[in-house]
Image (cartoon, rainbow, N blue to C red; front, side, top):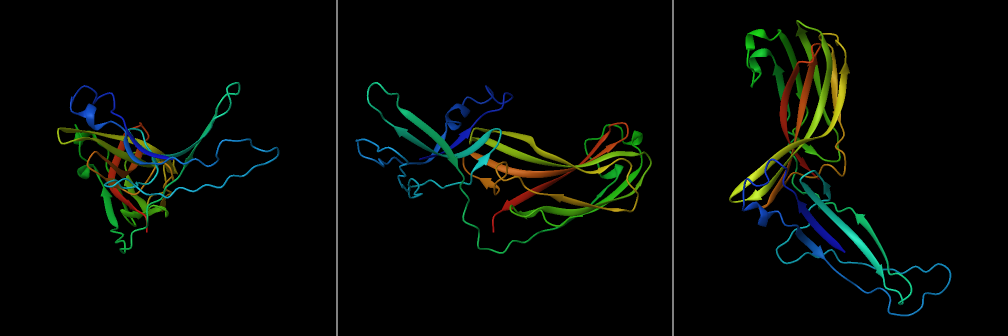
Length: 255
């Protein structure tokens, strides 16, 4: 049985920090070997061999939740090796098992957030004067989210000078690898869900609803060598493919 965190540097970070090469070595969380059957013959027919491993970590390590990311991967595997006599090939089979954290006991404060998107609220705009006029309001019911429950909220297009082509929700993972000398921080898309198609009615509440995918999300994690955080973008696509994006950091927990 083995549990490992694999860290990888994105191509833009490789070579930037020499110090990284030590800190991106795989981090072994747990490892254990047992012999389940002594040497001998396996009888004909079906043979079931029970086994169990205590999930006990090495002195200062913690078992993190299973997580499949781009630059951070936390994976737990079982490998069974069957050694055979000289003429027969040894057999080996590996399978992954999923680890969940213990739920936290503390009550979660949902911390809802209201938002208003207008040309004036946008950042990173080169020519504000050339932007069409629009007013979009909405709210997210929680930014401290329970990972097993959907992200919910509502969005209303109050007015827009130009037709809207699409409204989308984009879930983003922000993975940070590194050490004291420097950090590589990379944001990548996990999933994109369209919540409205075409030029929607003005004043009509549009529900926001997104389920967190199990293997590609985990409770927000911060350790010495890596961090895994999540954000959601509300993206409005105008008819000329102009993108308006509002970003919300999320904190995911298991309760």
